[in-house]
Image 1 (cartoon, rainbow, N blue to C red):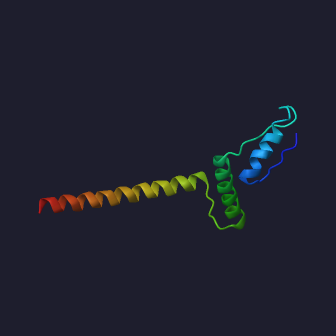
Image 2 (spheres, rainbow, N blue to C red; image 1 turned 120 degrees about the horizontal axis):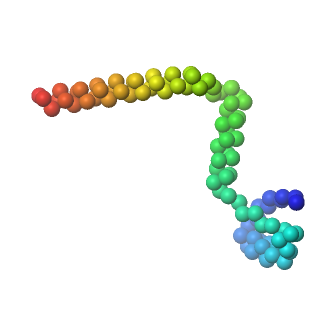
Image 3 (cartoon, rainbow, N blue to C red; image 1 turned 180 degrees about the horizontal axis):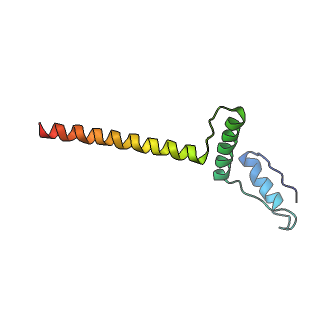
Length: 92
């Protein structure tokens, strides 16, 4: 089967649906558009464009794990510093 995508205004859509309903399911199947699919497709298209343009840095799994570990260590240090300063303020 051939798939055709149409963009029609709402007044025409009613007439078009009526007309298409005259055909059997074997002849015409109306496919409803999925907004979540379109959102994901647009996101992935943009991601691919950035990769193709070289504007993003790709890394190996090992490099990603190292970066994650560094981030966790930095976050733990920041939390320790915050907790330490809060404890010092409570003692005073």
